[in-house]
Length: 195
Image 1 (cartoon, rainbow, N blue to C red):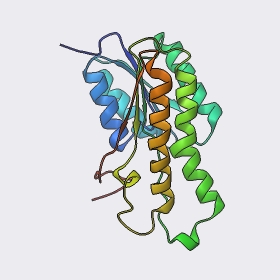
Image 2: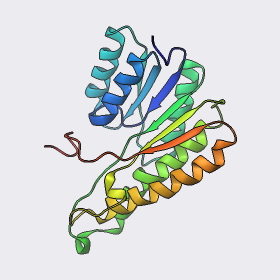
Image 3: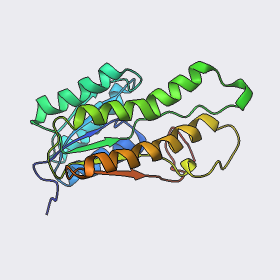
Image 4: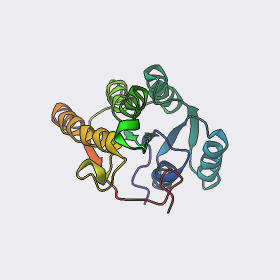
């Protein structure tokens, strides 16, 4: 039985890696899926084709998570395309690895804007349309709990910040019967973190 029949999901960063796998899994469970991408339009189209060829419904939307207006537009296109939003998976993220003294303020802004601010923006936009039973899943990292190697200070800081943001959101939205969870995977073999 398809447990997500008649549900709509938005997966940010859904064209590759974990986002692609999440989008395909949601579709396999019956959800209509919108996935965002920044540069990998060919990969996004391939994910959509995989989903539709398997009998699911999916569309890809170009949306840069560094730009709040594009994040909001992706939520709005989800609602327009499928009549609502039941599931939001905040998966898009970046990791800039370098020695602490080599980071720039632009590196800081890019990391925090994509890994934290974009989630805040997406959730604010989505909850305007989300009904009881809605689900928000933020993809963090085990690095939110421990700095396991040098060179990942900003990524670690962003994923730690995401923990607090998620806890606050869960408290704010619990009374509306919207669940907010944080998933903190360890190393996953993707093009962002190969082998």
